[in-house]
Image (cartoon, rainbow, N blue to C red; front, side):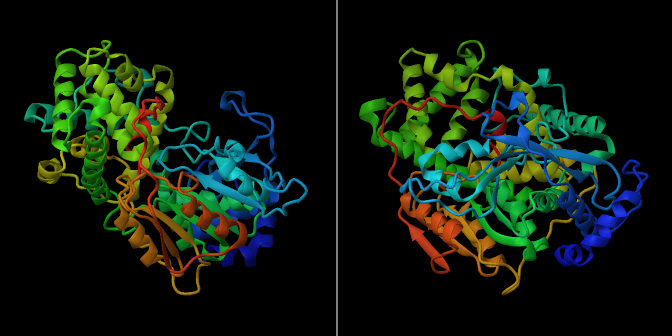
Length: 539
């Protein structure tokens, strides 16, 4: 937590010394304390700024969004060693009041956003300013997104050839056989080996602490004395690390769908808790489908809806739909309904149509996006590297087998699928870190805002309570009896009002506030959007 003071006191000295720094690689450069290394990098970034210009064509961004890069050390203990470049995007504040065209809105600097992951890119974030709910923020703030280290154009990480990513059909047994478990263990070992071989010694530097340090370098490059930040899902975790490391550099922070920062939870137990919570959300979905049996005909109780789902699983195992939709693809499509309840109608309609002989809606929803294979591989690689590097994991397969076998008895929907996603961490070949005990004391950190839905499965509600306990002066806003993952500027006007008041005026409610849950979706099949399967399991 000393980096802020070090930077402010020694900034000029650090700047004057940069021209004398050796230009060698990370291994050859001299070592220093990471706090000092962050201060060096921040001073350098502040001096250089960011040269914003037209964005790379492959990003598909319009002319009002500009891009640039910021250099950060691969290893903060060697700030003069190897540098990597992070792609940054920005839409400058419009200064136009959406409710009063004659009023010019004063600027409040940059609002930096991270969508989570690990492995998700925020480069597209500035586009959100055209959405009505975001226009007030877009008037006051420069909307800034970026691709974190390892993601997309920012020193991309890879663990396997994208052409080897399973394109379907695949299995997803709820209670896997010993033979299937053995196969998945071997696949996990091969994946961990591929990460080590492709990334080499650099692999260990893709972690949450470095993501937090990178965020401070980005703040300095934007020439912001204090950071205004909104993080969703995993973005709340390294946002909390930032608050812990650099509390003096915080202006305002929004933690949307907070990860549990307890070091005992990072990340093995966090994933077990997530799997348990998904069982409750899976029940919520089935209860909703049962209430609308007149529309879908899948059963009048949650158990009857489950029987319909299992019937589809069995048929797909015997004969994949469209030659590419097996139980694995079905699982991925319906897992998305655990994240976002506006996906419930399209999932229910697809299931209903399939049982009536029409597989097309299910094929449309669940087919792998082959043209996104490289992006999916990169997302998986960053997710795995960050989570495996952040903390110790059980290295004995027997522990994983015991814990997930027990959990699957009461939470079968997502347990084993989540275990396979994270199992490479059992065989990880890079050094592990000790998870940080995130805490801030009274008066150390400006007031921050935490948002949480009570029935969120991806980041269970207990995590928001723990974040609230650990960040002194924070305020928790709860969306009652709701489970959508990521609630800022969604359908709940009460939640949105609290976010607006905080980011635009610095006003917060009492230490805890509650909003009634948003209405359940109506039983239509209008929403046929899909999330990329690579991002489906992310916190």
